[in-house]
Length: 175
Image (tube, rainbow, N blue to C red):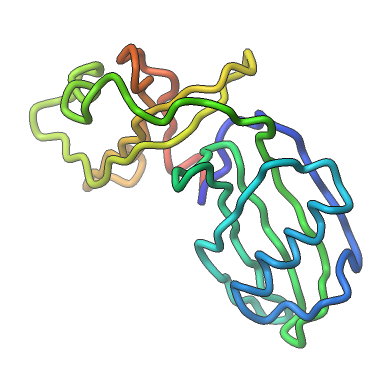
C-alpha cells in the first residue's frame, strides 16, 4: 500500500516486540495484534496485503480495515528476518473509528465529482475510510486513475456522502 497523508497515530518499534516467529502473512497480523496489546492501538484490524522479500529480511505490508473497508491512513510494515525473528514494526493507524459505512452517493455519482479528461481510465474504485489533516474521518470512494505515463497515475479520494474531492494523490510520489 501507499503512504498517504501522515494522519493518525505513528508507531515505530525497533527490536523484538513479540516472542512469536514471523514467516507468513498470518504471523505478521498476529504479531501486530500482540503489539496492539502493548501499545494503545484500539479497535484496529489489519490484513496483510503484500510480502516483500529482500536479501536479509521480509517486509509484511499490513492495511488497517474497518468493517471490511480499508482505512487509507492505516498502514503498517512488520519487518522480520527470513528465520522469522522480528526486527521492527512501523506505521500509522486510525483509532476510535465509529462511522456509518452506507454511502449516500453511488460510485457513479461520486465519479462525477471530479473532472476527468475524456480518455482517463479508472482502473479501480472502492469504498474506504480516510482521515484528513483536520482529523475528520470520512467514508469515501477511492479511485485509482491509470495512465500510460506513470507520472500521471494517481488516486482520488472522494467523500461518499457529499462528492467533495478530499485528496488527489500522485502514485509516483506515494509508493
